[in-house]
Length: 359
Ligand SMILES: C[S@@+](CC[C@H](N)C(=O)[O-])C[C@H]1O[C@@H](n2cnc3c(N)ncnc32)[C@H](O)[C@@H]1O
Image 1 (cartoon, rainbow, N blue to C red):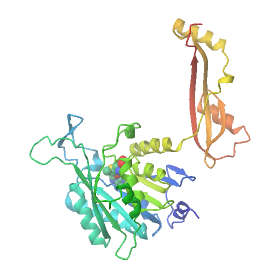
Image 2: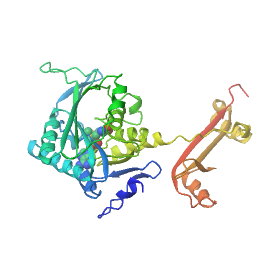
Image 3: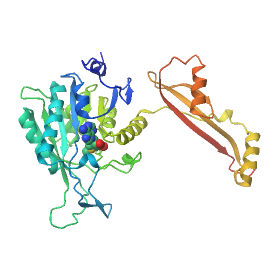
Image 4: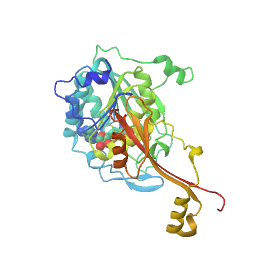
């Protein structure tokens, strides 16, 4: 039985995920991770990556792209004070420890604002500490106050569920990636590129390459990975690329939408081509365009709005239709023999073809 199916066997039912892809076993939940984790069965997750709030939003300033900007990330990142912050870290770490399978492991990233509390909570809870990795950013922003060294690193703590755990570590693969030498615990990675932010920006987005390294090092293909603070979905992207199953949890709809945009772009490899043989010079379109817009559009020869229905199980175009709106396209779909097929995505394309030469 696939692991994501095991998850739904939990005593107290999980809420409906905002996204569920049964082919790749991706489940995305919106809500507080403490509530969702409590509904996931014990011992069911192979690997956790957690990038919790850093609690560094203290109205200070920093430098971004050469400009002075506020360090504030959002209300979720405001510090509630050291005791409450530690209580919160202990609570979600304990919830993660419960759902980890006996040999499962967890990675937590953070800056000095939060990582010492995370490490202490792990010791209190009896995790087995495996490594602390220093992620070095080769191009850190300058320190504007000139009263500190410029912050160029983040720490990743890697820990197994408990002292008895026999954790997964792909030593040979890591050695190969390190050019034949044992991989060190200092990892240089650039922050996410502009391409990784093309669907929108999350203030603490992690590079996908960093997540890929973690997932490849500490899990096997088809293992179930969980991210309780998913943000823009970097862990999900890395898990999909590494053929792992993924559960993501994020409290805020804004970040869930961004994660979904990224995940869907990662999943859609459907090739849709314009059938040029069927493109005839539609003179009525030409005439309408001319009437509407005068000379500027007179080279428009073909215009169509098409909807493609992509199957949930067979990831291919099940049905395509020309329609003016999504509602009309669904109506047409329901009138076909495919009406009972489960659909995961509908892709809308608008095609306009212009003659390059004057008509
Ligand atoms: C440091 S960011 C994670 C960024 C993510 N690693 C990425 O690459 O985009 C922490 C995220 O946790 C979310 N968050 C904060 N408190 C939460 C909670 N109690 N449950 C679930 N998500 C929460 C925030 O909205 C934020 O998006």
